Image (cartoon, rainbow, N blue to C red; front, side, top):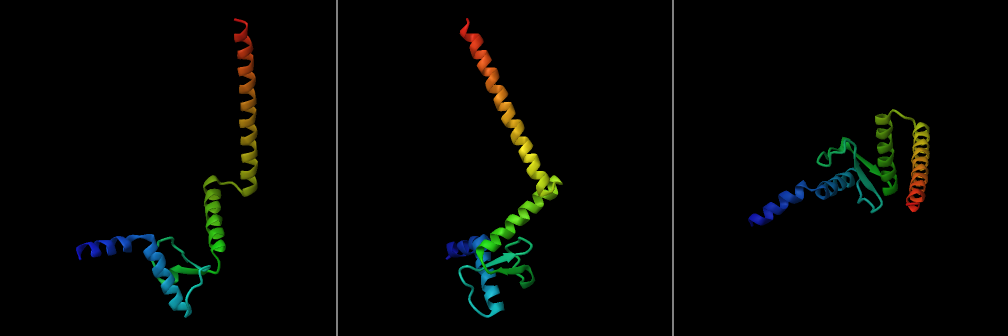
Length: 119
């Protein structure tokens, strides 16, 4: 009996438990079962906060993924202080510099190898 209570406590702490509870709350709100494509999103990203004002229903999992991708990019832009076009230019210049360094390094190794052949 004691192990069952322990299991219940561990289960309640898991993300899966809160995910199921959020789906149940949302289905009660809209009056039907959720489809397998629909996903419930926690607006404050706290899985234990299943208040209706904190839940949002995405019609498709892909829309939920795109939303999280958007948030991730937004935070990255705010941290960098760069617009997407500025970030692209920065990435291109970094690639150019790395590529140039690689070419110079190969040329240096080639010259060193040629000098070593003379010994």
